[in-house]
Figure (cartoon, rainbow, N blue to C red):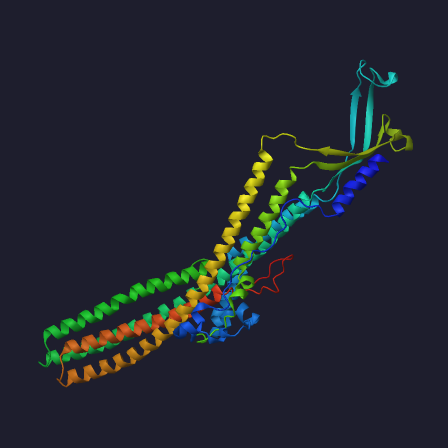
Length: 493
């Protein structure tokens, strides 16, 4: 009865929820009510996305598939391809399976451990040992069939803290997968936009070479007629060669960007050579984006949620370390059939059994346990500082993306005006030169200004699209935080 009462007391303690170590509470953060770059004090930038002035959250569907705002079927196809085949994403999925297996291992410590115990032995007993006089100094066979079991009664909650830590690590692995997905889709989007921008810059350079060759041909005819100088011809030839020299560099950058895209899709670098060879415009998104309020970022960015779950796991690990300060209680049992004769092994008199409690307690370890508690506490504090740091960095990334998206649109508008003016100036300079009303240097300068502004405008169009991709990435776009299955297989794309 005393043994049963002892076990009952331990079970009552377990049911009462005795748990060593601190209980986890998410950190309290100072979150600004609105984005600074969209506040009334930043009027120039507020035009970039005035939809965030209200507190309505952006639609999850649009945020999860943000690339659809570009209305580019090829970009959408590449996004699906990358989500299905990227090797970094596959590695993150395997880390989820590892975390799920570790969670199962941690949870198993809360249950009894039962094993089979079957054996046969040829034994000879000592004539000088304790035992039945009839068994001393005899040689005999011993047959045994049975099982043994042990169960640690988690009195102080150390095993439950270990399970809690494993649960948090599993969720962290899920959010890590989502973070890899967000980064991947952002990289695919920005590289695709950059590739199209480089394509357009090659086209602009090629068109300018053609126009400058026409001017060179005209200059040669005027020189032959005595209406132009050899200096004019040399300058025209130099301008053509200089413009042509930009094409190989731009082509190299475009091909290298295409190689990056191939690898992001989990394929060899040249996989997209034919698919992306045809000229296509630079993708254009909307001028305004609904970005919501800063507090939503804590739930929408998977890297922030991963960091928070890592902090939760580290907090639970303090309890696991603290558990070693206290005794550990076990219930062990044994049940078997034993006989020296195989024919009687399965008879009722062959039964043997035992059950009883046990305790282990580290009395002296030269400070190892307390040092381990100090270690896990310091690790938890490190992760707390890390979480606060990644939150601040996330806010910075959004603010940076907002100001870049707004200001680059203003710059694009100015460049469009400059390009139109330079086109008119180049046309007029050529007409005046043919009429003998201006020198050839004015023609060359006007054509150079036109090429420079056209190239800068194409770069600006690409930069705005990259800014928009960066903004969606900073907002945590590319996954759905509501439908991500935290206990199942990671969703693809």
